[in-house]
Image (tube, rainbow, N blue to C red; front, side):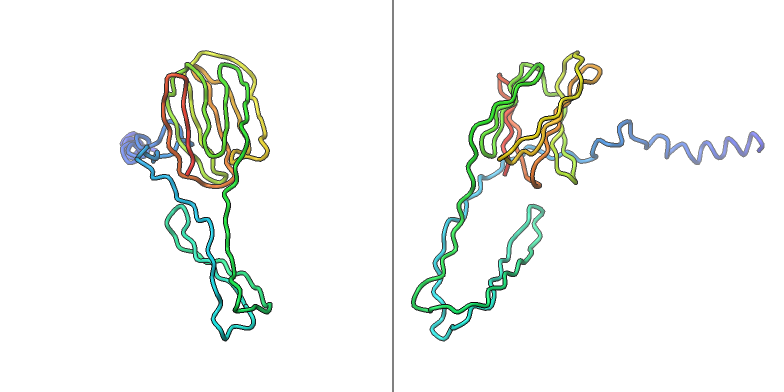
Length: 195
């Protein structure tokens, strides 16, 4: 291949080389910590069937996902009903007890849909990854330890993996589903609230 042809190929490939990202695993878009309105949970609804109702065939739940899509779930019943008494649908969000986890350089306190990473180290970056949904947080510190994995029961958090890197340590928090979240930096560390 001639020198002229090699130079031509180099200049054709130059934009691709310049566009390449240093860390291909870091997402291009990082969610912004915008104001999040706390959800008002559904508690209970009483519905009286129409007077001519004799058999309840199915119940259809129409719900909205975190991404805003509207979906349906159909529950087949096929049982007799008495229109004199109501059908009651109730919902009680789960409450989880306080959990405390010790790691090198920090502690994590988990209560319901909120957790505190207690540390004096500076949060230098955070981003989320999907499938499975997990939040990645890097804290500045020169440290060296083996990767630590902790599984958590009865919590929205399923697993925490911590590893040391050059100049920082990484906390990866795996959740049981996809959530919106808000991060608040405080003097004692970082508070993360899920929605």
